[in-house]
Length: 302
Image 1 (cartoon, helix red, strand yellow):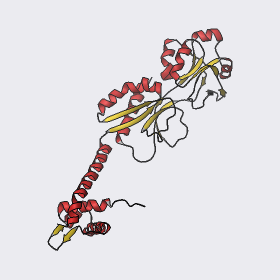
Image 2 (tube, one colour; image 1 turned 45 degrees about the vertical axis):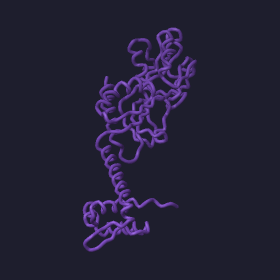
Image 3 (tube, helix red, strand yellow; image 1 turned 180 degrees about the vertical axis):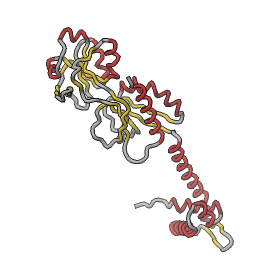
Image 4 (tube, one colour; image 1 turned 45 degrees about the horizontal axis):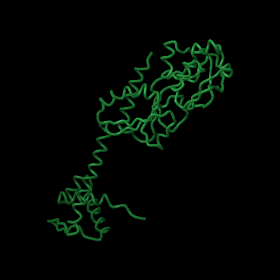
């Protein structure tokens, strides 16, 4: 099995060359003189060549030491540069954040506020991935994502940003033609418009104030993998839909659709920022999380 280079020994050697002194190198590196001497001796043994000619008064590079010194110095500088860059990123927000967001919510609620964030943090870039599919944040290399649901147990770290109610709705025309359901089980006799990425696909679960529960498997002429794609069929009176406020809220306010089953509620949903667990997160991700928390707390208050 191949051994890794002795990076520590090379860096210590470069520092001794730079300062022309074992003692000075030990002081600058906050090491003992014995540790510095052992590191150089170890490196000489590994390379099979003496690197210094040492006397009580003078320290001089050998030919082998001279040939190695320039590359060792470059290695030390590169290592310091990498470390300084990482430290700078842990203090000042900079770099790329890969961010996965549901399609319609991303277009309506996230994209409009990103210019404000990017102006506030000009050294941060956002790679915004829009999809309603459940993205594997860790497997696909995302720093963070948004989930709009009652979250199941997960290894991800979740931060609740705001509530997101859902409404069961139909157009006035549909209700005139087919009647108004008053109990969730009545939905089995109605045409319903389906969304493929519900947390419980194909089942709508309801609870009323008395704690009674009802579950129904709706069926109808259309099923989609993006909630906004249901709106034309909903407005055309082709069926009943169950949609979050950010998709159907404006249509409810305008009277284009009406909320039904008002005495029954689905599990309260919320917008969550989810991030991989483990270890400190880059400051660029933390400032994005704080920004979203501020904006959505302010923007969703009603």
